[in-house]
Length: 65
Image 1 (cartoon, helix red, strand yellow):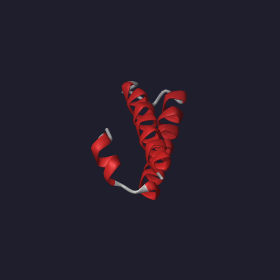
Image 2: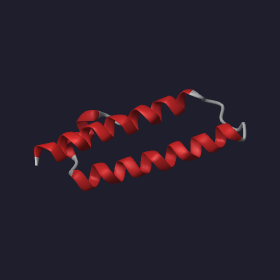
Image 3: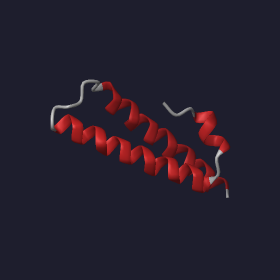
């Protein structure tokens, strides 16, 4: 789980890279679910919310410029 305070300390490029990494992880989890290899379905929700949290902080940083 990504903490909001950790994301706020990063610059715009760092937050963008974090979003990309989270999206890759979420894609992998979706593929595991599709092939019925995923045992912890809650991790899909957690990664989706982490992506939303990171995108919100990215929007805040871009609006501050």
